Amino acid sequence: MREAARAVMRAAGVLVGAAGIVHLAIIPIFMHWFTHSAASPPAPLAEAAMLLNHTVVGVLLLPVGVSLWAVAQPLSDRQKWAAPIALSAAGAVLALPLALVFAAKAEMLEAPAFAAAVIMISAAAAAVAWAVIALLVRRQDAG
Image (tube, rainbow, N blue to C red; front, side):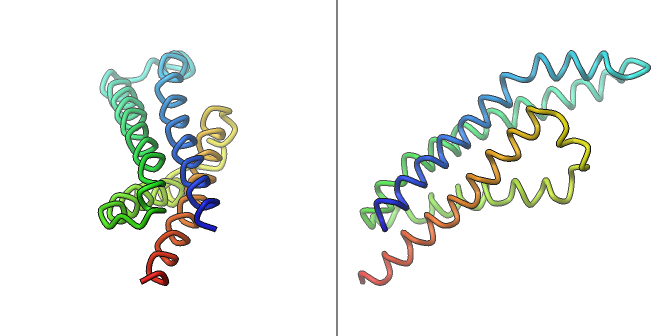
């Protein structure tokens, strides 16, 4: 079971990292759409806020994904330092779909990039939760 949990945690790390890459890659397309889809051009402050949001979130998803991937083996090996890192990365990933439930409108899922990111982050959140719990429970059982 530890091998499966470790593999799932690594796969989730790849998914989170991929979501960060998608987030960064979509910035030019998203900004073009944002500035050209409205009846009137958006205010410069709104455009700057959108650019800042996408850049910051995309950049921050990358180290979270790398952390999940990198901590999978040490957590599986029961190294004590790995638990807080795994729990904090898992908490960050679990917070993302929960935040989307409260913040996103249903029609936002019609955007393919947004829908793909939501699917990747939700899958990663479920996978990380299972993997971290499986590895921590096994850790406590082993003494």
